[in-house]
Image (tube, rainbow, N blue to C red):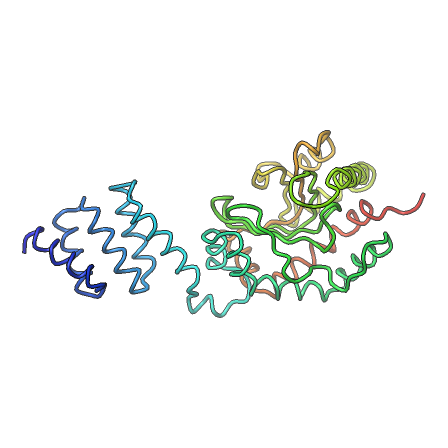
Length: 328
């Protein structure tokens, strides 16, 4: 059968919304005879997508886009393929309770509101586990001593925020203008799939929070106390903890500074003179999906909750000295 005859049959099957085995065979035959036939690659991708063979579908659609990068049909189908794949857990993923390739694919693929809804089934139980720890209660007590609004939970339900494409985060209740205990998840295009756990300073006035100028002044005072605490008591200790716990500095919109050793990271924190211009400064533990040991922690909620608990406990003294300094 000629390529023209195969093309005619492929179009007839597509018009009939028949994406079964015959449609696969016909389009594969066209590609074998004419490897640069972008439409056949696109139709093959559609067939694989409808058959829920997501990896094969993505490969075919990428093939179509390699030939015709301006194909909106192939691009839209590839986006839909990623979306459906993110919503369809494998048998191994169904057995997990934390964050796997699937959850990070959801963070990568969905819009802001959709992402929060999609990953809430994993985020909320994790926050519940953290809320039940003694370190969470210690943090709440410190906030009450400073006159913060009473709360029985460190992390409130529905508190997932979108930080832009490929990024979601949560922080402890009331922590916008405080040194905040922050959990963040990242995926492309923001950065490689990873999670952060630690203390951050949001020094920007961006957003809709009330009293942004007063709030910024408050958080800058906290950061100055943080630097004083580092200089007088925690310089060596924080560097030692970072070296042993996989701790890294992050600032602005940049990825974690993996090339900066802990001593130099602490030096950077001490020498930072214009935190308001930076907008975000964070130090804490990072877990990377492409590292075997980290991935094992990420996919198991109990292990991940322990990692969060250990990190909060390690950073609690410096947070408390920053947020709730002893009376002179």
